[in-house]
Length: 86
Image (cartoon, rainbow, N blue to C red):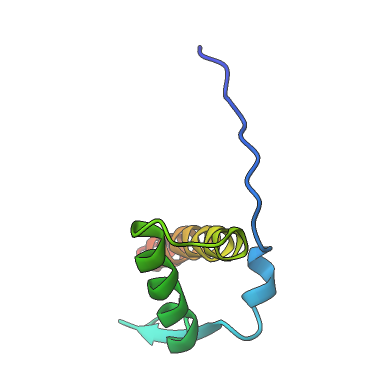
């Protein structure tokens, strides 16, 4: 088994957006966590700048935090959807 390589990433803590950037929406009778329109728009803005190589270090940290929060919500929502079938 190959050892896992851990690479530190500078990011704004994903939890900093929990109160202002997350909403709960019922989809097909399941409550799912989603980004607010504002946070989703910010993620898209940062992603476009990142693709162009124009992110400042501060924006890169912001992007990393939002992207990590997106991965967490995707995981949580998948678990919620899977538990619906039980």
